[in-house]
Image (cartoon, rainbow, N blue to C red; front, side):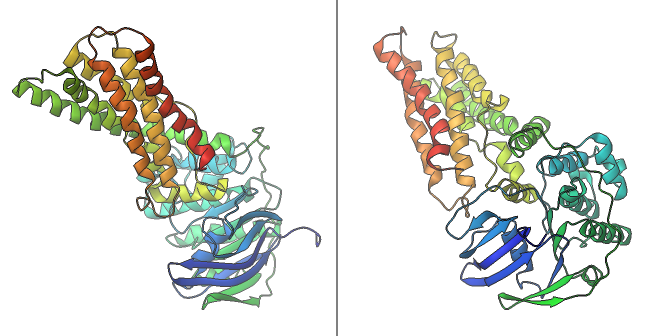
Length: 451
């Protein structure tokens, strides 16, 4: 045992918030069976230490290792961590997830395959089995907190291998029975070899500590605690997932399931495009349409362009209740847009067909021009996805890349405005530019600047 790497090692860790240094040259090792309780005043840096240990925060100096593997350092290097549990101070999930889905997702990202019976037993232990098929948004604040804690404990509950579990104020908002359940599981799981780092103001949780650490004045001081161990918890371990990359399949399933359930991307794109289309059709019904085909083509394709440039819905899901931060920690990077073409990408295509039909009738270039908006939507989504990974979203110039899409849009306008359309060298070049330029952005952006 003594030769094994610590489950968590912080080396000369320094974290700044703006101009303030929250943690300064912090060193900490957490080994199997440790229950480390972080105490200190509000704003002392307990949550910062938890999130830095999870790999979420940028480091001004130092390194974070999990089980001997570098997770993050101040030079910007990041790696996907071994499976570990994380319960943030609030949220860590999308409110549109079902309760059972949140637990199943937490087990999947830990490399374990959860079955319905196993998930139901975990929920029953916390009095949530009857709400397993409810959306998290429908729960009370205390029940939402339970879901976050269960998901945080799941990597330990599902595995007979020692796991690191990071809990930020886990007892906050819980009723007395749930606090007793939490204490019992922490105590039993630590006796089984799992390690805990817990930030809390709850003195009853402090009684579980094998080591108590005070966070104050940007540094930590440790007090060793003599604590009797309880009986270890018999872990109903789950089979190891057969997926080569244990976080790839769960993240794709997570986004796809929630997109299908909420239809948030399709609705946002359809509503924005339809509003523009109704305004344009209404305007043209009151005034004489322009004689110049180019102006009419510009008006016809504008609704599809507006729809294509809408922010993809999965980014809204990630910003909901810190779901993005949870995925960031589990993957060792922000959750990325997949290369799968979702149904919502066809909305601008359908809008283009509709508006062209209204304003031009059935033209031979209708399908060609409309199809280009699928590619335009893919490129726009990729640019939005890249922008979402920056620390201050909206404060960067990344979204100016959307201006690049004006060129294929204008080429589409020119193509639609042509009288006597036919395929020749000139029109073929235009078509290739309309399709290939956005596709190049969609494919190359992740390679040039990883999301």
